[in-house]
Amino acid sequence: MAAVALRALSEELGSARAALSLVVLRSALPRPVARWTDLCAQAADLRKTTGGALPPWPLPRTVRGELWRSLFDEDPRDVCAAAEELRAMALGARGRRSAGLYYTPPDLAARIVDLALLQGSSQHPRRVLDPCAGAGAFLREAARRVGASACAGADLDAFALRAARAALALCDPSGRPLLRRLDSLRASPVADADLLVSNPPYGHLDDPAERAFLAGALPALRGGEIDRYAGFLLRSVQLVVPGGTAALLVPDTWMTNARASALRTAMLDSAEIAAVADLGKPFLAAKDTRVQAVVLVRRRTPRGRPTRVYRGRTQLAPVPERELRQKAAGGWQIYRSRGERRLCAAIESVSVPLSEVCEVGYGLRTGNNARFVARRPAREGEIALCGGEDVLPYSLRLRPKALCEPTSALRALALRQIGKERIAVQRIRTNSRKPWARWLEAAPVPASIACLDSLSTLACDDGDRLGALLAILQSVPLQRWHRLRTTDVNVKPSALRELPVPRALLDPAAARTLSDLSRKRAADDSHDRVIDACAYRLFRLPPPLVEEAEREFWGPIFPERFHALQEECRTLPLA
Ligand SMILES: C[S@@+](CC[C@H](N)C(=O)[O-])C[C@H]1O[C@@H](n2cnc3c(N)ncnc32)[C@H](O)[C@@H]1O
Image (cartoon, rainbow, N blue to C red):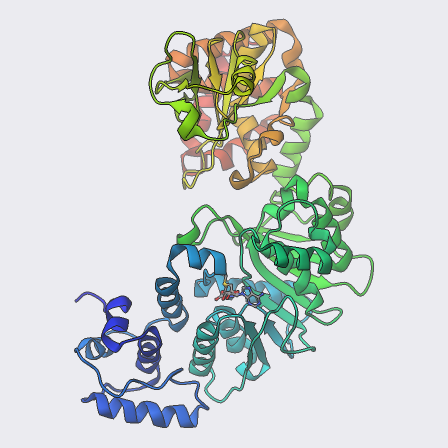
């Protein structure tokens, strides 16, 4: 039998409130009842004994259909998830985005609370605060560990708070949590929180007045766009007592974004970054958002312990605070095992940045593709275009496009690319679960075609070097380094300038060999492994580090792909 749809249930009962109350009653009552009036009577009694927590609203006196009965034939549902679904229906996609309303799956909330207790300052917090409590996914996990009376929460959304109160009452009926409707950027329901856990809202802050307020209250946010989660990162440390812990589920972009350097420094000044866990992209409703759990301990002393780092549940290499300080301006690349740290260091020690061996350019930004980009072959006098959709590894598969009636400034900009062969590099934001999915793909572009801004471009006068760069860029060691340097959500064009190019490639003979291979690869992908073998040699990686690069890159197909590489290493023409 199909599960009762919450939309249909709320239509039948006349409101989302009534639907959520029914979902809560399904969890709270031991047995189904025969008549609606009996259910209403039981609900009223329960509200009395639970101080109005269960169910969150009184039921309507009458009901039309029979869906309410069907709900009692099902297993109880997760109240937090049901509240999210009902709220999302009411707000629509845009309203939901602007409220930052994406609740947290219970296992993720549990993971963050456990990490906070394990790596924060106290295993027995006396007061737990969620300043953006939503429907209570985090507080419920905290209540399971320390009891609901130790829990306090705030939110702007009254519906969500009622759901949170119900979720807490279901897991700890005698607990008395403190829940308040307030703006946590300006106030707090408690002054004694020694643990804060939260999934704050994400996304840019659009309201100019709110931006001005936050830039004044939290100066590290100044300069450029303000991400709401960044405001809550800073604010969360203020909301716990000195020595207290704040654990947040946030996007990880603040660690690597060039423009977040002031934020990184301010976070380090105010808190020890006790632990960070890369949690991938767990939100179905926001599938491009890569998130992390970050555990912060409000400073009492200037020196902190190394940051413990995880990829999922796998522990990686700890990062000394000294290193975070040194690299606060450029960004923190912390998701690395000890082997991966050695791999990156070895690659960097024999390399120069890409920007030193060729010109790294931005593709053409038209400002209005609907107006300036025609989807047809270029006519006489027009400039042909290509974009990300046209790039395959090592070759273009053009879907014809032309620059159509450009302004003179736009035409001049496009003409700057014309006349020289370049490499087009596509920075890929991928949700692929295959570990070997590439985050950079590149193809040579003829001198007559301009690249749009979904691509970056590489150019240099030496054709062999350009051909060799095409291969190096797509080789496993470089792809591996790139992944460890950035997240796919944050593949900025500027990051390409720093890609490591082996100094050995500056030797014309080495460049010619690799360039020849790159030409052959365009017609036949069986050359991939020989290219990788060349790349490993140029990076001078010893066998254990080659294996290190390969193992994570290929994941389950490592044995087969590594064997193919070893075969190539035996027959490789390059000395
Ligand atoms: C991403 S949801 C997370 C909810 C909850 N932490 C959970 O995981 O179930 C963010 C919540 O923050 C609330 N919120 C946004 N801005 C806020 C503010 N300034 N003060 C308090 N709550 C806020 C929203 O109403 C929303 O419920």
